[in-house]
Length: 445
Image (cartoon, rainbow, N blue to C red):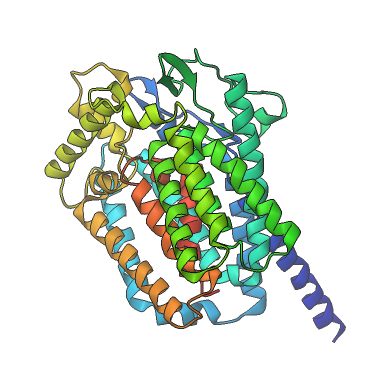
């Protein structure tokens, strides 16, 4: 009896540590603190490529630790919950298993198998993270998750505003959290020209302003839809204040797609509240301020002065064309996971403009290029299953629940952003965010 009591006490300690690890992963998700390694397969045309460099991030260590605790917990409890869940989703599991088999075959046939195996290992990591969220997030209070995002959003917003005012990175302790050292003259840095003046776009602790904007966008949507749920007056005031500063920060990133989506979400939410007659003035005022913030500030030039002949636009078009060539040449299995840049060097072997040595800015083309029509088909099928899952859950619960209504919104936002960039598949922070959203959409609670 005493041994059994000690065993349950030890299990409870492990569970508490496991929960702490998960919350730490969410807390440090925006950071990019890590150590890069440069083996031979991370070079293309003799050039180091960050996308192919095996990198050990702080979040990787936390996820690995979470996996170890999770395995030991299952072994100790000896429950059949996960086996029952797998049996209930036999079609889903079999499809994913077949997809993994196709990925392995594609890696063996790829030009750079080691890069493929590294990409495959990362894929397994993010599948575990998403699956863990789907099965276990019910053990966490909604306000706990929201508080983590609230802390990160406030931190990233103030850091981004400070970077914009300083027109450079801040350094110091922020470097330890992954802030790059940069200023307006740093090569390949993200600048934008407004009224003839070159302006540095803030990065926060992210690898690019667009990734920062997408994180702020997802977090703000979750906070917006939770304003009227489970929050006291003080907590609600803090959430509204964080939305205000995060809106300023997302404007400063100059991420056109993220800004446009945020305005659309706020307008949609305001109209929805208008017909429900729930404090409609607050949301309509916020929508009006967002629109005026674009029309009456130099930011409008970012949208009005859209030049299709701009170098960044031309490079994206060129990369899209190259990806279509890859799909045409290898339609079934693709180039192999994590082999897009390797194949790109062959397609453009006569083009020495290294600016184009980057992934195609569209996750659908990138998936099709690397895993063929099989991979793209499985991805689209999984998206369909995810929407079906959300719809079934909404039917079984209160339609006015703020807890569940944001799920189809954030999933749709991810898929829209994926049309215009690649970071959800190629950058640690974007991959974790994608895994989080899919896991959240499949979670029961």
